[in-house]
Amino acid sequence: MATAGNPGSIPKAVLYYHPKDPWSSAGEPLGEEKGYGNDELDRKEVDIGNGDNYDLAYLRINSSAAGTGVPTLVVPLDRYLGPEIESKYKAVSDVSKILEFLDKSRTAISKTGAISHSPAPGEHHDPPLRPPTNRVPSSALAPATIDAQSKSNTIISLVHSTPLDLELLSLAGKTPEEVAELAKGEQGTWLKRRAEKLAAALAHDPTATSPDPNNPAPVLTSKSRALLEPRLALYKTISAVYDSPTAGDPSAQDFFNKSKTVWEVDVKAALESIESTIKLSHVASGEEGLNAAGTTGQDSAAGHTVSVPAANAAAAEAESHNREAGHPGGLILGEQLCLADLHLFVWLAHAVHLSQGDLSPAGIDKLGERAGAAISPRVRAFWEAMLQRESVKKVYPDGAH
Image 1 (spheres, helix red, strand yellow):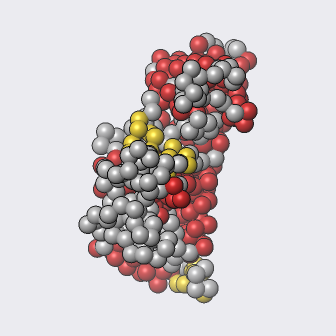
Image 2: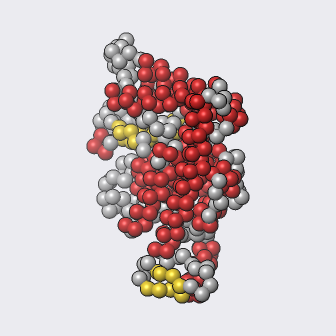
Image 3: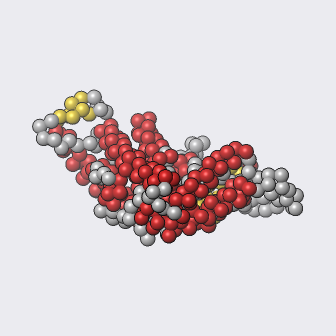
């Protein structure tokens, strides 16, 4: 980090993450797709398995009650960037905002309109604050049209909605037997540690003073407490069920019922919504073929009726073009990778992992079995298309997590 006493350096953004946390993984395929180098971000691992995301020092950076508290991106503020001044920073804890920042920080044209051949975080300034490398500039992953942006936002909002919270999904057990297995595994271990660390943080005396006046003691704000106290109460409730997963106990049975609802109602509905959103996106982009012989379809983009042979021929031609161009197609916007693809794949990969599936074309069927739903064509095509991307292969070398 650059400080007044260290005039020779320009600060980089700092990414707090955990290698096995699903949402921490979201930035990794983006980095691969955009051509980020390993030296362009300072990465700091947060041991969420030990509950370190609830240490007071970390809560000063991210006191969000949702999920695991990672990733968090700490970025230097523009007006404080420079070797001659003390740097000041802003913490970004929303996954969507983090990916948007990383996407915008490496594009062929910066916000100022200046060409930048390697606009990593801190480089999209006029003039650049760091010398550019020889990496090829990349296009933005944010959709270019209002309609595409709307469909992208629909997917992103869905996979980050409360019913689909990946931390809570990982804790959900539909039967006493399932919960007993979870309690013996990694979920039981990190649930206990997170509850302990969060309880200690909330028990900290806000009036306590630090012996070092230059390093004040971390203090939780009233707003942070209001967010975190319900999370601790939830941890305690789940811990009690994990300690004694008895079918006849009312609290335990309520937990089993809610877990069943999450998987077999909420996740199932999400998969249906994803299918319909991708279908609408493909229709709007003119890439949707028709399969029912003897029928016609409405081309919503052009506003006229399309015959079955013509639509299927167009779809076949688009698929052929995708293969020749090295793009498998099947993504949310067809062949064009967008930010929503990364959000959706990360969520699906972890949901597949929780369903005992793997990163294979057939792995997603395990998710369908757990949710009580057949995997629909476009969701399957999306899954298979993402599995073919080199960025996914690099980020998930050991399988889904």
